[in-house]
Image: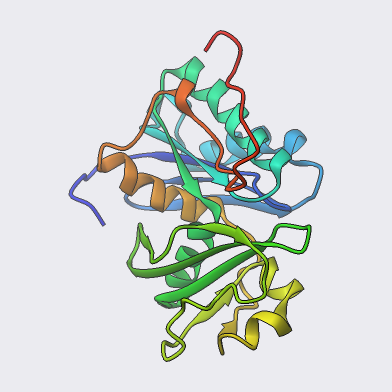
Length: 235
């Protein structure tokens, strides 16, 4: 997926009910994944250490730390961003944020080659976080429209209904009837939440493109404009 022959990516995600960590190298990948609501803060660091141990590397060997920047749970995206800031600042590593919606679309391509995916996460308050993607190779999920938070009614009015869409995420489970009336998409039973492995793939592409930042610039994506993020004190 790149010309770089030697790389090591550490990825973390706590943006939804799932919590995961992954290490991606040219030869292998290592993942820890669990659906554990309200336990992310307790488990993510241990998960990160386990995948590093499984890969036989240390934090010093990591080139970039990727994280699920959201959208998703406000608390979850804060946890991931804060922890990644702390780890990356202490180890002097660059970071890159990856969309949780894009990660789910990428997962379907990674598993079975599905290219056209509509990702929707239940945003509560009768709304969904929505992303529409095309993926043609590992590490590249192209958003066809800007990600948004919206009511499920008429959310897919811009979608080409002639395309062979597949659907992922809790938004499809919560609002299956409303969304399926708009687009005849096959709903995946394999992908419910983002996985840090897909965040690693997408994060590597951004890193190789020169889009990583310093730790102090790590920032969640809430999509909701009224929510703000405070960086670590003194950073």
